[in-house]
Each structure stands twice: as C-alpha cells, then as structure tokens.
Length: 171
Image (cartoon, rainbow, N blue to C red):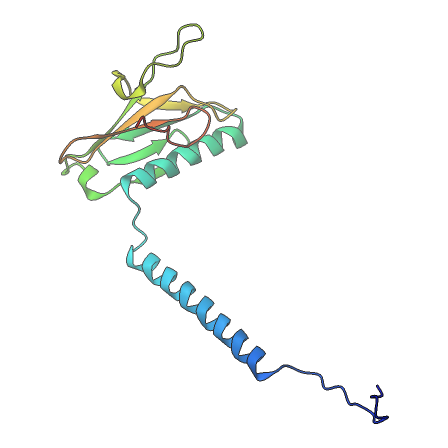
C-alpha cells in the first residue's frame, strides 16, 4: 500500500497486547465460574433431596411408559424405603425412609372433574392409592404426593397429569 508521501506502508498482522490480556481475563473468569459451580456440586455429595428423587422417578416412569408403549406404575416400598417402578427400577430415598425411620410417601388421586368444571382442589384430596400409573401417552390421573419425613407437617405436592411438573400452588 502506498501513502500520500509515496512511501510504502507495511501492514502488520497479529494481536495487540490489549486483545491478548482481554482474552486471558475472560478465560480466567469462565474458569472461576466453572470451578465454583463444580465445587458446590461436589459439596452436595451427589445426594438428592426426597422431592428431587421423586421427580426423577416420575420423569423415568413417564419416559419408560412412552418409549416401551406400556403402562408403568410408581409405588413406595415401606420395607426398603424406596420408590419402585413396575419395570424393576429403584429410587433410593434417605435413611429417614428405611425400616428404622419414620418417613413415608403416600400417593393420592385427584377426583375427576364434573362436566366442564375444573378438577377439585388437589390439596384436599383423600383418595389414597398404593401406586400411580403412567400410560404410553405419558399421561396419568391427576395425583398428589405427600412426603412425610417423620418430623413436622407432611408436604403435599400436586403434579400435572401430562408432565412431571408440579402444579402451581394457589397464592
């Protein structure tokens, strides 16, 4: 390239020191975020809460029902303190649910709606059932799970019949 004075300009290629420092700073920031998240995950020890284990069991039951085109049931085994799928899969719960513990998981069905009315309030259902069944289309009857860890008031969670999501609670 020729300048206005007639001298040849030489074009330099490469990175400036500011660009190099900026990239190294971004790499250090990303590394710090990854290490912090990994450390917090490692501190949990891989232990899932009862609610997380329950949701994992529901997701697996729906997945197996859809992929194998069969009805899959989910139940709670009081002897071993685990959630069981009819396919033989087990989802272990904490020690408070073993034979020595006082914890318990109970399933309740939500009564069907009448006509075009909405389903009755799932929090008040008393239709206890030993298992919840998931059809090949991944659906189930509307149900509520009561988690009683043996201390305090049991927690009731209403689940959507077509997904493994919790139903939004009234405010």
